[in-house]
Length: 265
Ligand code: GDP
Image (tube, rainbow, N blue to C red):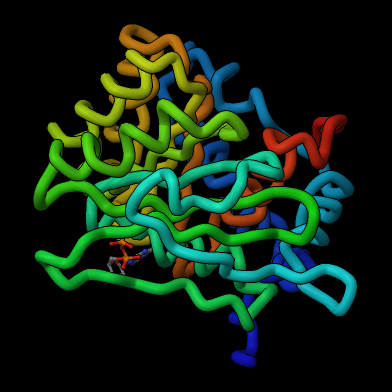
């Protein structure tokens, strides 16, 4: 298999000096220093696991002989989806938002897992199912955008409405451009169906601190004012630098019931 990239494992992150390490593990909190005094920061720290919880979560994402992490199958329709046997999370977002890169980063400690990319316009977009041992499944949903909202109706909407074992939906938003019109369509649908979800801001290594701060504050405000089902804490990630990836693994482990007690750091 491929070698896992630098910083894919917490052990590598822990070797960094303190402030860089904090920025990789808790990228949202690193932004706090740039906020105006008096800003409500409680929402930045709702999910703030300590090292032990981060490590237990990492173990779930590390494959070994007794713990297989595999691509299971792809489906274009719900009747082709694997049986809903395990708790499940799904990742949705506009095409090019960085979804396959993020899933690859999450699974970087299981380098044998192949995260397929189907980008050819005109081809039917599929849901890709991955199984993480006997613990949970993760679904890479078709990227919406070039045919939205048709893609929603055909695949995403049916999945969201029918999937009984779905524990949480991760809605990816581009950290450089912020919330777009198509993202609002996704939000409206998740809200309408009453599905619990969380927003993940991608590619944060490409956004300047100012742009990132503006997008974070705008989204936090939007979530506060306009949503019911969205977790109030935003997750920030860079699949290139591995920022936020360890924290996201921990949150996935938690919401799938595999890490019930998460002690705060
Ligand atoms: P998808 O269509 O949502 O699956 O998007 P991809 O994962 O294929 O990413 C789209 C483009 O953004 C590719 O050129 C990636 O290399 C780039 N990209 C994805 N994630 C990141 C990131 O965290 N940082 C940077 N700098 N580029 C990224």
